Amino acid sequence: MKLLPIFIGASVLLTGCIGDHSDLKLFVTTTKAQHVAHIPPLKETPKFEHFAYQAELMRSPFIPPSRELTEEVIDTSKDCLQPDLKRRKGRLETYALDNLKMRGTLSEDGTTWALVESTDSNVYRMGVGEYLGLYHGRIANVTPQYIEIIELIPDGSGCWAERPSSLELSGQ
Image (cartoon, rainbow, N blue to C red; front, side, top):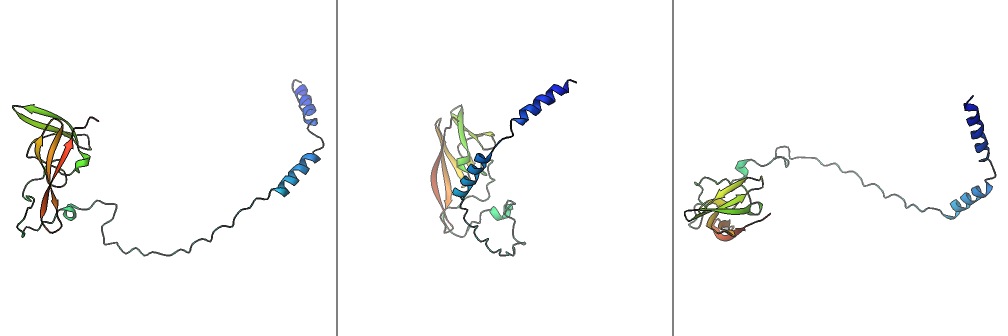
């Protein structure tokens, strides 16, 4: 019994929706006739060309190269400046200088060490004579503002040239 008034009210409201919609239909048809959308034709799809991969025996570009491929080949037959190959590599010689940050200094009995942070957020204490960077960079001097570094750069003819570099104190 309670649903009967709701049903009667809904049917009265829906009866009001029936009417003459000819003006609306005329508007829609004239609008569609006047506004024709221009869609450009699709471009022709390029022809597929098969590529035969023939580098199965080569190193995958997604795997880092082995240590043998990245080691330096140094011509020791020439009588010119060469890096010391017998020297054991330092812990920061696998990082480029622009990936290292000087964070501060420590001093004791007149000796000053630099605090150097690597990209893996480890901080190392480095002193004069120690090595860092990819180009056999030897620390020449440590000041509170910067580290003076002397790098050995290959000149292309089998010899090496010294290049001064520095690592400045970074507050960030």
